[in-house]
Image (cartoon, rainbow over the protein chains, first blue to last red):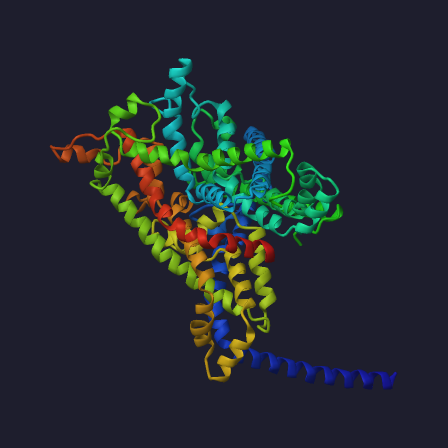
Length: 323
Length: 294
């Protein structure tokens, strides 16, 4: 017993001296790398101020924020804002619009770059391939405002080219911009036009990594081009598809604020309003900070859960996942 | 592969494939070509013909109008200022942070890396960020368009990875020759990173030029609106760019409305079209760097 205590003390003193030397060592390393830490400071400050302080700001969702009282003085209200939100009929409208748009995106937009990349991959004239690539990347760099503006200029019933054309052919005009039935197809078409070409880059990179010998072996075995695509090309890019699908799940609830905000108007609001535009309308323009923070928080939490969930599922089914 | 036997089916597929991709390629830029054509046309022509690629009479009225208005010219100035200063700020913040983070021996490096990655997964959202900007008294200042987006976490990690791949021997040699840490960054690392820096300069610059969201949130004063916000006012809300101008100038002739809208669209896109050829050389590689190493 006594011996044990003595040994313990000895160990303890050894431990402290070890710790002291480690502390010294740390201090020496800090001193040695001081310039690196100085360089690091503006960036760290940026992340703390503009990323981490707003994370604490989500606590507003549980408070009744009064601008004249400030963040700290405003009283806590618990889950009241969430309760109000879930009981609000707007909640179902937002959830429906958001999910339907995301579903459309998943069904119509997500496969588009994959198909386009597969088609491009079959082109053997490298000059032709490069020209097409150059053209289809362009829309990615054009702002959403320009995309929306072009849509307005062409689709308006007042002299818009598309409607003038429709009028001469069918004698009728369609108010694409104000008709709720046209809102979703319009949004998806814009997204496809803008991002489909850009989306091929990552798949083309994956396709470039496929071993040519596999194709040669398949040809010897008498595989048609369709069979080669099905049995060699697609499996080769499967993990890329899965990773992008996981990333997509995280953004399933943010269907591009700018695009929807720009294309939304009083007449198509019932199908257009989504979580982000709602947060903007209530928070920024009407000053309901706490309530709209709660809506925003609900959205981001679901987003994180979806990413982690999809990632878990992907790992379960034998894919590598994101992390 | 080129000389192997090809069945009729394969030849049909090839013809079809080349045609379809050709059409897709043209479709990608066609709307823009129509807008450019329309911006040079007279109103009479636009009402007469719905769609055309070459106007019969080339008219510069729309552009003359745009550059004679205070509002649009000022917004172009705002956009240029934010793009130039903003991109410089982006590069400074990104490089100074990426460089230390590329040192594997730096204490606390993993913690910082995780802090950065976490921001890619979860954020405070629109309202808390807005309130922080407001508390910092950045509302209605152009700094609100510059500092809140000083670093893109994604770009930071790609630049960090690039720095990490640079040969360590070079660094050791420079250190032995008495080079300081800052000298190392400035004289060795940055010159070696020119292609990556060029890519991100252009990405950041395009981002600033196209930025609409931050201006919508943080700028209420119309005299500080960047071009993208002005564009929306003119094209979508159909507000005359300078309604009072016509009353000030007796010789003023109201120019065609539709072609003005198209001309503003062209002006809003022009810088992108100018940098695109330079961009294109680099970005495929830049995107790949990001996707492969994450």
